[in-house]
Image (tube, rainbow, N blue to C red; front, side, top):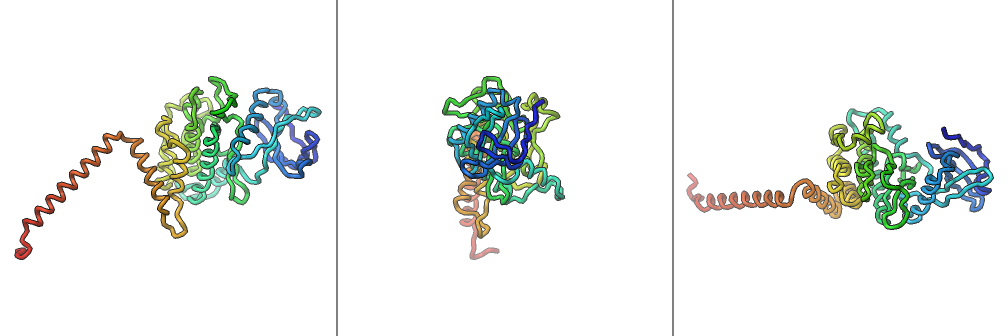
Amino acid sequence: MSKKIELPAGTIVAERYEIVALLGHGGVGYVYEAKDLKDNTTIAIKILVPQHARNMAVVARLKQEVELSRVISGENNIKVYEVGSDAAQRYVYMTMELIRGENLAQKIEKAKALPHAERAPLFDLKTINFFLSEIAKGIANAHAHGVIHRDIKPSNIIVSEDGSRVVITDLGISRSISTSLKLTVTNEILGTASYMSPQQIRADKELDHRTDIYSFGVLAYELVSGVRPLDGESEWFTRSNHSKLERPYLGDVANSPAYLNQLARRCFQYDPAARPATMNDVIALLSANVPSRSGRQDFGACVARLKVALQDTFASQSFVTVCSIMLLCTLVLAVGCVTFYSFLTAFDFTNPF
């Protein structure tokens, strides 16, 4: 059992941070709103429970989170400032920017509690598209800097109170592809089973950015329908039977538009090669479905939609098959034109009867 460390308001940590209020807690530690007495700013501070404060692997991951946050640094990615310790009180802490709002898991639970028409999406489509687009941008930004998050899930997404900002948090088990910041070892499985790709569950050595694309697809499915697509009887069951569980179709559980059904289905495919190649492809699909003020699709958006449609076609059918179908259609059209021309030349228009 982890010893609780609920600190009262006014507690001073490391002779610098004054605790204001408890924001939340989990198995690793407690998160507080705090005042930075040195800079006179308001921040969030995560304080590890003693059990984990003595765990060098956990402390190392906090330090990694700071390093990766400095590398990424984007509007949709949490800013983490420093990791430190309070020797007098034996606290290990991490400071980060304070974003007032709720995580996406809380928003989903609240939406589920509201009355809905049968099979209706949890949120309006504009909100869903906005949330997914902002999350996709945050993941794409991490990937552009060589960072795989590996724990994309609703509870790691914060939506600001005014709804204008969507931020990805918790880089604790992320991995840098291009640097030496790789703390996990072979066969070490970190993450949440319901959102993990099959490759991540198997702890593949060559795990790449497409594991985040898989997790994004699961999140998209849940954001629309309120349920996770691959929830087993338990965490252990899901991990053990992940490859055997059937990948459901979003359109079967929610009256959602085709592009969202397509997005979720492509992203959480078992085979990484069947998923979108990059998060930029996901962003293109979402952008293609945001109408302009006139209600019409912008030309650029239409091009993006065509690109994604072609990618889907070639992902599901071989090039030879597609060419064969196109050739057949061309032949049918040619025969039709020749027949119609023959009819015109043979018909006497001056004496129709």
